[in-house]
Length: 294
Figure 1: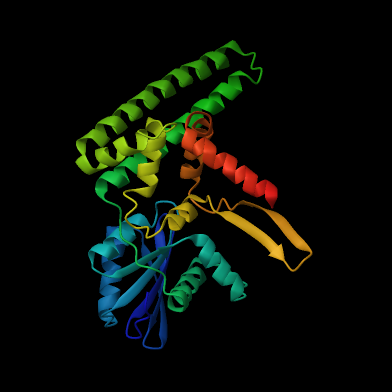
Figure 2 (figure 1 turned 120 degrees about the horizontal axis):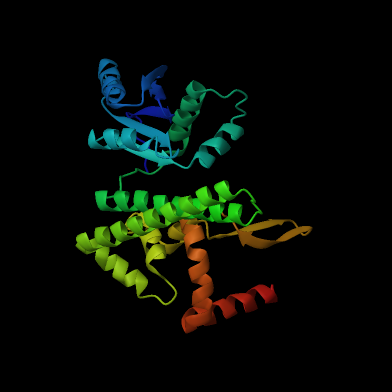
């Protein structure tokens, strides 16, 4: 993205209840804190108007879901918005030798990062994708909770009452899992474009319903990626090389700096595809051969 010298920079550090802002405007730094709700968003708009901020580039960290409402609000106000991986902000803070850490200072780091790097513009996912993501992530959490309860049963609990409670909880979780899976199937069928993408994904040998839900919920329609390498990086599936001179030459490994939900969802389908999909099996053998030659 090209730097617009007339555009003010707004760094925003968002937490559950509040957000701190650091405004770089006409050579001056201004700081303020607002509530992370509709009133706080409105007050931020009034603050920008009061300071005659006509054009602004707002930058936020992708912290959980806390940033989403504010980012959506700013986007609908037709402001330029960037949502950045927190690791990038952390790396920038280290490079600037930041010694202290507060919400206010973090907002300043985000603002200066935005001015120096000029990150790409963000746009929200369509509503059907956003709803799908929330549902598939909730489904994953339900399955994790179910496995935790199964592990407790197998840990050697001897109290009959506690075993009964755990077994009942597992039954309740099973019902919730089925309910969410049913909702996901119905939700996909209600949206023509979403259903078309879903049918294409499940047509791949080794890919099932849940993996398809996760893929679509996390990647959407993939129209925000210009190249497959960008999608690989987003998933955390790229190889990290570690070489220096002639003495340090470590074996390349997956970076794992990316979307945890996608990486986990693709693991078992990848194993299945290697066994049952001849194209993937041939590709896997080729990778093994290349890796062995190195």
